[in-house]
Amino acid sequence: MTVDTRHVSASLRLKNPTREHVMSLHRVRPDMNRQQVTSITDAVQQIRGAQLGGVTMTVTTELYEA
Image (tube, rainbow, N blue to C red):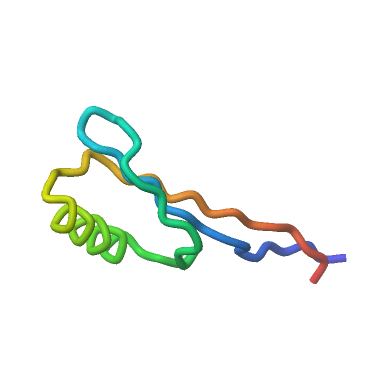
């Protein structure tokens, strides 16, 4: 029996510089790279007109029998 993993979902949580929750984006691509996350962060900052302090990406995976 071989066990493998697959991505189920991913979300981004954006916070402002004082570490307060600003926004959560759900159902983003689990294989997103740092540059793509930075691009999304920059776009949200432009829309809000305020700086963001940090971004956390959470990826949910599941185990399955391959």
